[in-house]
Length: 453
Image 1: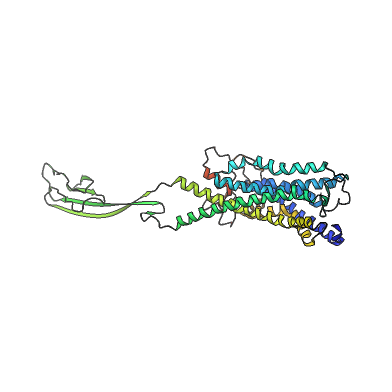
Image 2: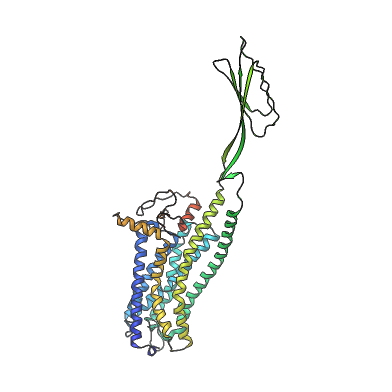
């Protein structure tokens, strides 16, 4: 297998591996540093990227070694490199599955951000614990010729070419099972997303209530004002007879300084049109004015509809981010998997383009994660850099559990808070819809042009 690659090609592979590993390490450092400096990055999906970044860094420790130990297969360096690659490289695909599981839980079990955080311990155990078993076991396994499992894998020290079937069974096989499960979760979630967004579109496109404007229901009331003035009054005063009008509601009578009486009568719009008024006052002058008044009554919002709307929006935003990470996984594993299948089908042969593609994409896991992390949290990144430029000293905020962090952006007239303040804890009575909004931080600052998922 080695004979099919020239020395120049092998040197080029080493340069590619180390260059991509450096980029990935820088991306991991960026992810870990920004997550620790500002609570605005503490979205549930970013928390999973934060945990995955440690595995990406340790993977890059192995890929930075490149081909340095291929001449010393029994050395500690070669065995360590094989262990790091076997353990932490497939763990990135497991973290993508964890993101998909979060999507499934939010869509079908209505998990909020706090409940998702309780799953993180299980994700840590699964994503790093499952690959650890074969990675640690291979250190002690030898064949009948005394050769270890970790040996010359052409690109670096890993499972040697004598164990091609073992590579498929304990490395590429589990990774593609995880990818397929993740894919089917997104297929089902995509169908649900399409149905719910179609319902939402139909709801917004329906005709509005003709009796309501912006959620206000208007009631029309007819108001009639009648003023009665008399020219003379008897010594005993004017005796007011009963005010008789079938549509009158309430009347107030008051006497002014000239002995005149003023009567104000209000009637609703449902009163009979043919009502009459009888006032036993001589020499009276009657002035009547009628007006129509609209009274707006605020319609009480539907809490269930508002909650479901926020849950669906947050879940959809989270899903868009998770699908980006899934796409990065496909970019990472398709070329390397094709290269491995080719080596199994064509024993002892190498397809040079696939070899170079594998050397390029495999070390870049942390880089792709950091790029997606930065793009989907761009508003928080801009605010963080702005605060640092103004000389504000960052404070390390809470990493696991506790209160729900600020989003780093603000909507409408809401005032932007400092990115470096540790968020206050919210009471246990926080609405589930509010926690779900924090699931994806869909609010953006129009002034900053920020993007968040």
